[in-house]
Amino acid sequence: MKMTLVPGQIAWARSPVRLDLAGGWTDTPPYTNWYGGAVVNVAVNLNGQMPVQVYVRRTADGCISLKSIDLDCEEQVRSMEQLHDYRNPKSPFGLAKAALCQVLAEYDPVHNNLPQVLADIGGGLSITTFVAVPKGSGLGTSSVLGATLLGALHKSFGISLGQNQFLEKVLMLEKMLTTGGGWQDQVGGAIGGVKYTKNSAGRSIFLDVEFLDDHLFGSQRTASLLVLYYTGHARLAKDILSKVVDKVRAKEPEYLQLHQRLAELAMQMRGAISRRDLVSVGRLLELYWKFKKQIHPSATNPEAEALFEAVKPMTSAACLMGAGGGGYALFLAKDHQQSGKLREFLANANYAESARVVEWSLNRQGLQVSLS
Image (tube, rainbow, N blue to C red; front, side):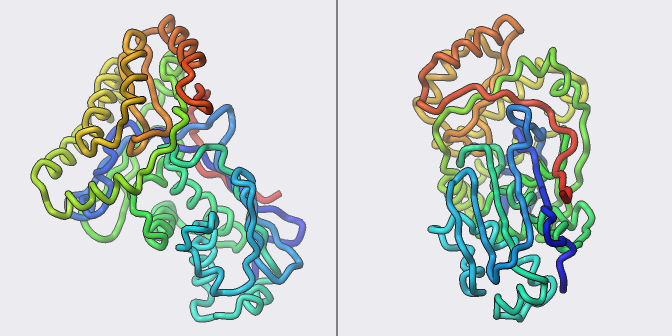
């Protein structure tokens, strides 16, 4: 096997993140295996940029160099044992290692000598990641980074896959790392626009992605009413996840019914977005937040509740993104005057040292990969 990436070239992959608007938890095993799932999300750039980026280049070194710009750390991988240690919680490069293991296994699943593998493919590798989003954001960054890593590596090795094959490969990374989480998170960033995505029950995954009218999110007049705010508090989704999954596995009726209502809510959100009905979108977003808190109390906290209460006069909807518990909050202002007041209030709220309003814009392209 040889890389198609030649010396001096860089494979540059970049992706948006996603705002989840309805249906989260229905795409999480085992519920999604038993009953299928449905989610609505929108791909967004932050501060005018795709916030998740990966750079891959060839090196003359006989090793794999991993670097994270945002975490300000790096690691040199010189053995297969070190490369396969992707579940090590002390390493910030588990996802990058898992992605490379997956790609290399396509060519030689039994080779256990890393220097020999690198000699075969034409040299060492340097993989640099940059995620301009804090950890625990609720914007699907882990899955999106997985998709971006695979996109860069596939381009480097000349691998070409169809959309669903690629999405399944990303999901396999999540399984390798045993992080759990939704089966559809990667869709939010890998595929641009506003999407209603569903999957049927079963162990294999086939995602049916339906693109929705993006007017509400692409028009400045309506999009400016949606205010994105980083709370300054990281969420611990894995802790929430394990507790929710335990209740689903026990087939507690209230949990199964709540998941069914979440799936129905996604269908209703699909309709509201298609009708360009921003009032209904706000009502459904509020209902989504209510359901999240019913899923698990730690989806919220006293600080978030106090913040949401304080902005009520200016908003018609508020919801923490992802599983909740922290990260980003999405507010729908009542009108343009209230939107200005909301932004001013949040800018001076002193909610947390790193809390801030973040400018967002609709991304229609999704994952982009190029050689430079």
